[in-house]
Image (tube, rainbow, N blue to C red; front, top):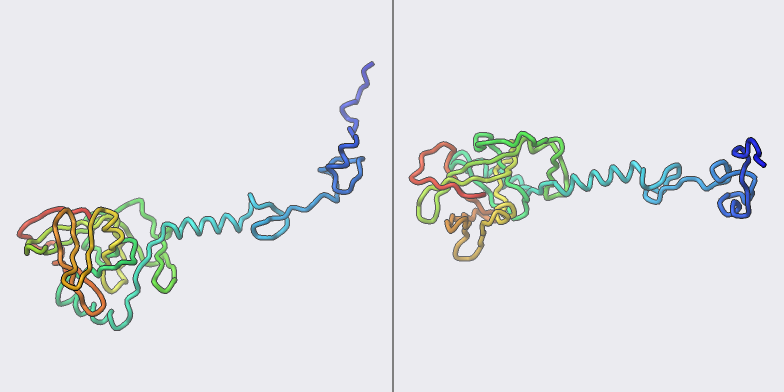
Length: 229
């Protein structure tokens, strides 16, 4: 015998009580007014679950930005005055920075090419005091400097993935970025040197800071040799 409308009958049995919050079996779980409210274990708020939590998504986005952030050394006011004077009288100086994760250059004239995919608003720089900002780096690309090696020969040096930051008092040479490309930096009482492809360059101490002296972009050279930076 076939009963019409069978599909409209509510199916209830003893197992329904296990799935309703109120313990009654005359309705389904989705229609139960006593069912548990949604609660997010991440932000500890009700109304949603962790997988769709907006707070968690924002946090993850921030963590990704931090992972791609550049760390920079902050020069104090007294050193800034000395550096400014040195730049005018001796040309471009590269301050050797053991904490910076990228080369930071303050002159656009030092760049020979730019990365068109670079978006300044998405790149954060964390200073030594812990302050983060996306207002410093305006471009990224390859820079070119002329540096005199230990044999008194001028060499053309390229620093790849360098960041353009016009507001910093002096350009920073990142030890981290250089060593990742195969360069070596040695500090000792006798001598401080940068070694790239068996070519050595002197690193000059000035007070508590260390610098690589370069000539102005476009100056003539006795010899030219492209080196990875």
